[in-house]
Amino acid sequence: MADDNRTAKLTIDGQDFDLPIHSPTAGPDVLDIRKLYGQAGVFTYDPGFTSTASCDSTITFIDGQKGELLHRGYPIDQLASQSHYLEVCYLLLYGELPSAAQLADFEDRVTHHTMLHEQMVYFFRGFRRDAHPMAIMVGVVGAMAAFYHDSTDINDPWQREVASIRLIAKMPTIAAWAYKYSVGQPFVYPRNDLTYAENFLHMCFSVPAAEYKVNPILSRAMDRIFMLHADHEQNASTSTVRLASSSGANPFACIAAGIACLWGPAHGGANQACLEMLKEIGTPDQIPEYIERAKDKNDPFRLMGFGHRVYKNFDPRAKVMKESADEVLELLGIENNPLLQTAKELEKQALEDDYFVEKKLFPNVDFYSGIILEAMGFPTAMFTPIFALSRTVGWVSQWKEQLADPQLKIGRPRQLYLGETARDYVSIDNR
Ligand code: CMC
Image (cartoon, rainbow, N blue to C red; front, top):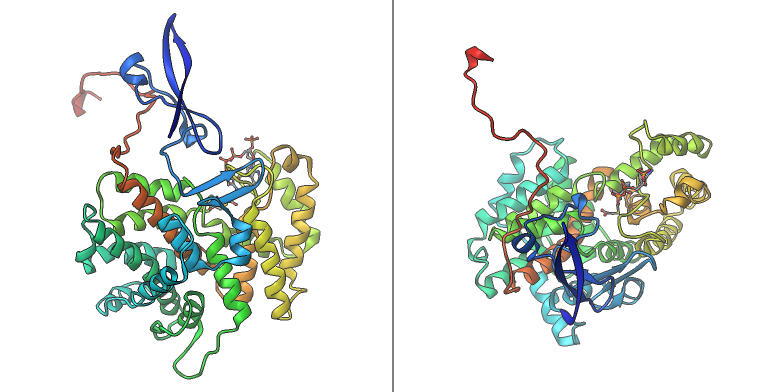
């Protein structure tokens, strides 16, 4: 953290307090209020953390005004067009792009950790067939702590490394098995001769009765979806992982907490919600009615796949996702897919509408991902699990970074208390 001895002055009831200002390598300056309560006896108030940096980090940077997303300094559009998911995983985890030998070793380690402990099959079988795959993922990932005892000691760097590789390697197997279970098909075991994306498609779509050949354009699109979701700075699920981890919880419990948070429709659940919304809209002539509903303060309806806390210009991931959607639909010969037509028209009309312009609401990554995933044959319930498996590397990288920080403290926010002050207990007969 660059410290140039600049301070901000805060005056409370005539008394001055100096707050150090930290200069980041990119992004706005940060006021350090860590000693404020001790010195001035006041808290700061920021529900939703709209003005609060919860940690320092060197992993991912977002410039919401420019629509820029950098992983370890590399722009997401360059990574999406020139790199691939496992290389991005290496970059996020270790800070630099790998050499050929480092990448081969990393890929080998991930590939050889994709199988699940066989006993976990029974864990899957305990769920109802109609369980949402995110419910299964929260349960199964949390349960990994009961199966992999040799990688739960967070104070041992080797165990942290093994847990990281296990989580990245096994998440596609867990997501694919959650899907297979829901459709009543046998679990398909991972194959070491396939790439990460090919293997996931294989585990989702192959059946013992027929040979399954992965289409390279689809596996490329799958890989790109993984890359575009790999990390996103201190978003809600990542902050959840960090908060869970700050108490010293084991890695599997922390990542399960992240999955639970991601599930919500304001976060990763938006991709499922967006596709359901497009289906509900049905045809382009219905769009004005839905735009009016989204603008109506008395209607809880929001345009799913629109808006972002940080991006106020465009979401660079949505741009790449849109290109991918066009590519995949063309390959599958469904360019005239009615959902895509509705999505494109909705995007056009919303971007021309004063409400969306003034509030700087643009399509986000979830707007187009659902269309690609549906075209690839995934049911809507699988969209958020795919987001979760892609984001696992981001959660793991941020978790590792946090544990390596010598200043690590348990996360313990305070509050603006507006309840009753102390009062005497009244016995039940006198109430
Ligand atoms: N449709 C209609 N109005 C909206 C929308 C929307 N999608 N998003 C924000 N607004 C309005 C909101 O009502 C508010 O209006 P006002 O200032 O009059 O109260 C204003 O825009 C600012 O919104 P906010 O809710 O205060 O902003 P936020 O930063 O707290 O929320 C968000 C960001 C992503 C939760 C929100 O835009 C949203 O709910 N979008 C739809 C869900 C979605 O697509 N989520 C995926 C986000 S990207 C992937 C991910 O992070 O997982």
